[in-house]
Figure: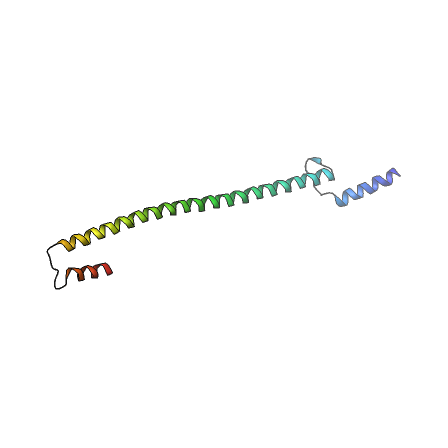
Length: 114
């Protein structure tokens, strides 16, 4: 009987074993080794995807922070520009000069419409 079992095991090993196993592993050890490698590949892939999403998030966050800073700077510049325009309009109105044939107010309206 043992010889029949040995023959069946030999046939089963021949049919179901990988043709080449590394480090003389038996069939079960080879399957476990392959499963471990697949698990490592999955964990590496998962880690790489997590890193990619994390990098993308951090880049978007950094860009948003920069945009908010730019918006504050632009608001300050806009306020400064409005004050400068108001100051120049008042200075032009206070000058004793009449441009060409237009009134100072008409000239300022033409300039401010641009």
